[in-house]
Length: 257
Image 1 (spheres, one colour):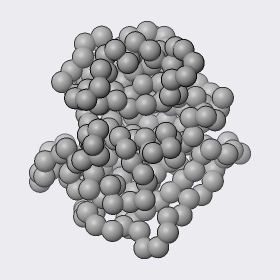
Image 2 (cartoon, rainbow, N blue to C red; image 1 turned 180 degrees about the vertical axis):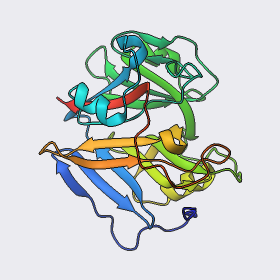
Image 3 (cartoon, rainbow, N blue to C red; image 1 turned 30 degrees about the horizontal axis):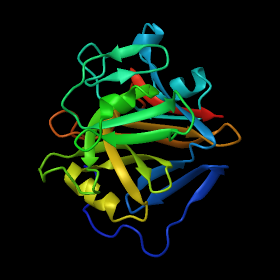
């Protein structure tokens, strides 16, 4: 069974970032590591890609989404329903709407603004912002579970269940943080650990857990620079055996501008 990381200082000394391409950086923190890909939206365009709205017969894996759609990287966009196509919350991409119903979840990822002057990417909190109104100003919206609130506080209660996790955040400079922890965390403990890292997190949302949690990113030379898959999930996949990417019906992806 994989080692359970615990909240606490995961980095000794200053943070270390590897530049994969201009505006695209990789950081690994702790042992076993939490992987963070930091993306500058001034240089990269974000998208939501959905098998349902694109009319695909099956759900690609994260590498297949990237290679098949001219992307640089991809991470889960959201959890999904039993049909393995429909997001559990509101989801709209540039091609159409995957799910038009808003759930009770409080984080909304917005990108591709409809008019100049708006942030290219933002995560809004429905408890303190008009998320539905702001979503009308963007072509792309993905609703998910909030991990920190608009005041930067951990909103997950402690619990014994744990899993591999993929999540998406934004920092104080408006950069997007794609985060993957293969080792299983209770979500409250993962949030606490991330808030303790020198990431400058201001918003954070949960996008998937267990073996489906995926993060795939290419470097400037086209080779895979980040290839992360999840495994452990309490009550579903209680081992560290998974080594393959699982199909994902919806992803948040990014391409060069």
